[in-house]
Image (cartoon, rainbow, N blue to C red):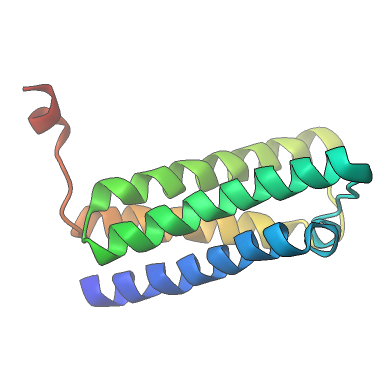
Length: 132
């Protein structure tokens, strides 16, 4: 089971790494896929920096945590994706739905489920060990 979860984390991590590189190298095209139009140098800089860092940190923590069998590192991308999913759901409640709205939320929730499941089977520090 652990090997399957580690493999899935690497696959999801590669997907996120691809997303990070896409935003770094071609922010206009990548942002368009997210329904964002980056106007001018300021917009391109923001899209390039924010999305590259988000997906890059998610991918890096996932892949490094899986490689080193360090479950603590898996909590970082789980938190990032969990917050993204909650905010997307809040946005759907506030702003309404749009075509394809379920896909990004599904991907984020799948990340959270995978990472929490892996965190439970990959070695990690227990909170009681950290406080003593």
